Length: 278
Image 1 (cartoon, rainbow, N blue to C red):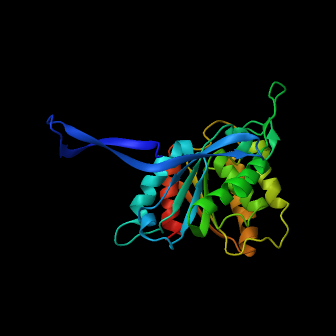
Image 2: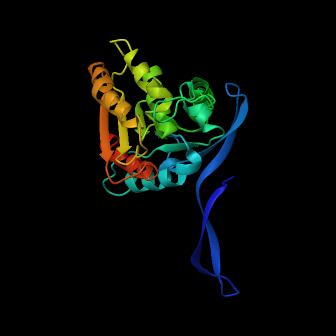
Image 3: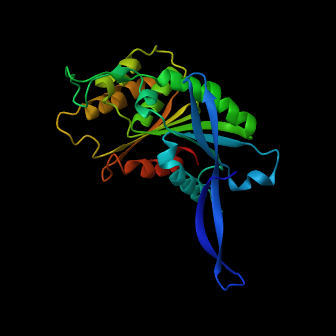
């Protein structure tokens, strides 16, 4: 049953001379019990317009983190860019992954370090569950999606903020999981630059052949004084990425100087589709 509906009035007159209501359904909801996370997890699925036209055609799948925030926007961008005479991206199945504890699930290590790279006695360690979340995403949710729907032709993971950090960590630790990695304003500052420590630990012969990465960052991300965000971001861009490129990675990096951390996600996903999925 479709649970996500937008209501509008359509021009069909009833006997009472009022306009009838019709629901527009953009997706369906489902749940799965995750053994890896030991909890019930909800997700939303959008199927492309042509999905019912053929029982043979298969579609790439976009796995969207923070689906409860960005699912509707992603569907709108996808519909606009995959339709018309000159589509800039293929039709895709969109899977919006809903949160329960995003700090736990999307960060690669337990940490009490703040954005300035410092740790204070009163701060408790949080997070560090990204490997368990990866086990859920790759070992439980993805197989269910691929069994239920006609998935094929590639996979894409999209994340913003902690979600962007998860995307980059997944690329470093599990490059074979997805074909395209889209990280929007990733939290480079996490755990005093944990991401760069992971990148520096990579062997010279990484498994990035044919993998694509898009990183979109806002120009106003780290306005707070003393933040190490840009230091780590620059280190990743100018030191980690060239090493990955030598091992086959195809990256794109885009700065959005007029966007904030809160506004860059939709602009970034729009640009990512134009840049790497056409």
